[in-house]
Length: 241
Image (cartoon, rainbow, N blue to C red; front, side, top):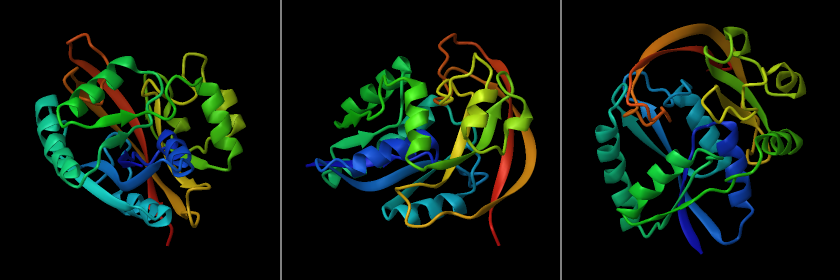
């Protein structure tokens, strides 16, 4: 039996990966693990409020571990915080860490290198599967997800707040991965076979944030060692009253 933690982002790739793990009798998931902004109390990069994250965990039925990060934490700070958490998991006898990554080789290598130092092993249930195949399976299984963040380099703000369906996929520009694996967009899953109940939400305002991204930031897959400005559109979502 592989005792594991699951790195939960709240989005579609996490949800589909978790679905497959829950159907694997050789895997036992002890915790969902999510990093959040310490300043805003929202999921890192996705911008989803912690209350909605907690509703997801409650409806999945797995204990949630929240790790709060400083705003735009450097890679060194990130590594230090995460190693402390993972050392604790290792002491509990947890030997595996599960991720929803699909094809970013550098990111997988980074994760596996850090796990080797614990030591733990990484599991990647969706690795190297075609993005189109993944998103079709996701929709076909009855999962539902809303776009909460888009990178303005790829998509305009009208995509923020849309639900992923066939119309959404047809509207994507050809240079955008249908799973957003290059960071084009991020999502919040509110329904599907891993949930006991659908999460009712309502759309809030659309806001933009501009960052000076560096390659040291773990959320940036580039390796050019340069700073660059990136504009993101966030669609706030609220627990439906």
